[in-house]
Length: 285
Ligand code: AMP
Image 1 (cartoon, rainbow, N blue to C red):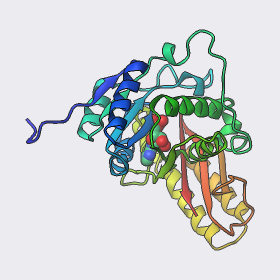
Image 2: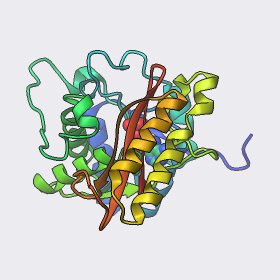
Image 3: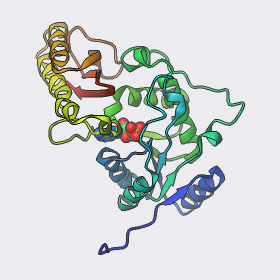
Image 4: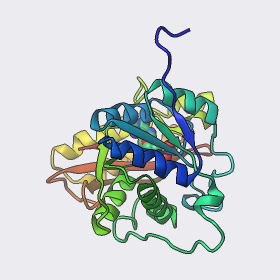
């Protein structure tokens, strides 16, 4: 038995009940913070919850594997789902409620609306995952409208997603503060991800190379030289290690436009397959 009883996390699946619960907290003067997730929780998600607790009195984590952000040949059906383990982790982390809507309630027959964010979504993951960021922007807008939090937290692990959400929130005048959180990594540098559990042991041993290569390119870009040669060497090193690289780019940190040279805040970003598993990562320059 734990020395202190683990506090309960209410699992809520009904929108009316979610709204009643949040309304009661607000009436008591509590600030509400939302952490959207797709479940299969790991220490990266829990770091977001821990920071959320410093921003408000009440923390809601949503768990929803959003079908509209997966392409037809992507891993929606096999995406890891483990509600019991997720709820136990959320309780230990001090989460007040888990918002776990059903897909049929999120997207009932006749559902016809989408949020499209231009510009930022065209390159990087957007070029390889058509419709992905529209699915993300739509579901995040719905989650924000459902919970109506004072603040919402997202990881820099999904850096393009974070920028797309910031853009949508600003463009649509959504009244919520968006916070980006640094990427939590394994000791060998691999960014924690729910998809890491797909990696076979040999792939898991290779996977930290992605972060190592991005860090090398960031160090070279920092010196202000041309980015193209460093990127070419990085792609060659990843391909030699067994990755199939989708993109590797040095981009402006705000616009995500590719940079020939770095002269301000920038980010090195990549997506690459190891076997059947698609890994993404990014580091600051
Ligand atoms: P997901 O469940 O993968 O949709 O992720 C939910 C949230 O957790 C997103 O805002 C992610 O960016 C964030 N996240 C995922 N992995 C990490 C990580 N390793 N470190 C920090 N945040 C993360």
